[in-house]
Length: 288
Image (cartoon, rainbow, N blue to C red; front, side, top):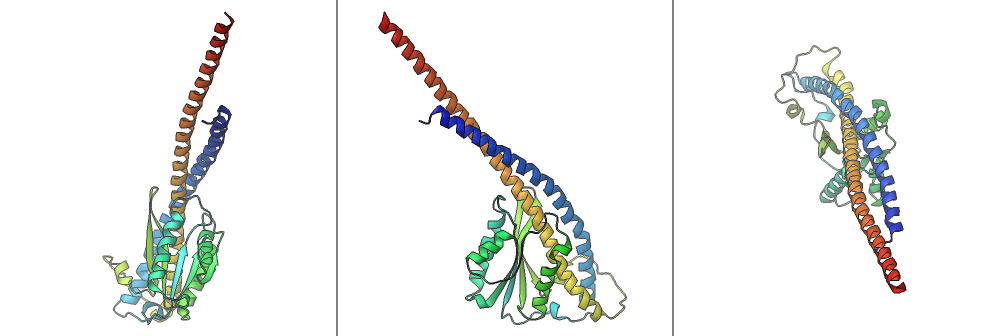
C-alpha cells in the first residue's frame, strides 16, 4: 500500500494537472465561440458565389471550362486539414486514419497521388510514413484570414489546372456542434457537381460583361479557393470544440481521481492513527 506521503504527492500533482486542463477548456471554449461565428458568417458568401458560378455554368448559354470537366485520372491530389497541436481528442486521428485508409485502397504507388497538408500533426504523420507531400503549411492562426492560406489554396488550384493531378479531394472535420464533429470528404476539383450543390435553388439570371468565358476564367479559381478557406474555418471550429470536449473530460477524470485518492489517503491516515493508538494502549498495558 502506498504511503501517506506518496498519496498526498499524487493528489497535489493531479490538482495541478486539473488546473491546466480546466484553463485549456476555458480557452478553447472562448476560441470556439469566435471560430463558430467566423465559419457561419462565411456561409452567405459561399452560397452566393456558388449560385453565380452555377448560373453561368448551367444556364441556357452554359459554357465549358477545364475546371468543370472530368478527365482521365492519372494522379490524384489530397488536401488534408489538421491542427498544429494535439490534446484535441480524436480530431486529428479521425481525419488521418480515414485519409490513410482511402489512399491505401485507391493507390498502389506513391506516383499515383500527392498530398497538400495543413497542420503540423498531419505533416508529421505523412512524413513519418514517407508519403509524398506536394505542399504544406503550419502555424495557421486560430482565426485565419484568407490571406494566411491564399498561397497554398492558389497552388492547389494551379496544380489541377496545370495537370499535376487530375482530381483533388479535400478532407476535414465538419463542425456540427460542440460535441459532434463529422469527418468529411469533398471532391473539390473538378467542379462536376454544381447542379447538386444548388439543387432546389432557383438560379438567378445575369447579364455578363465581359463574356461568360472570361468571367468563369477568373471566378472558378476564386470559388475553389473559397471552398478551401471555408473548409479551414469549419475545421478550426471543429478543432476548438474537440479540444474543449477533451479537456473537459480530462478535468472530470482528474476530479474523479482526486476523490479516489483522497478517500485512500483518509483510510491510510485512519489506519495509521488506529495503529498508533493500538501501540500506545499496548505499551501502557505492558507497564502495569
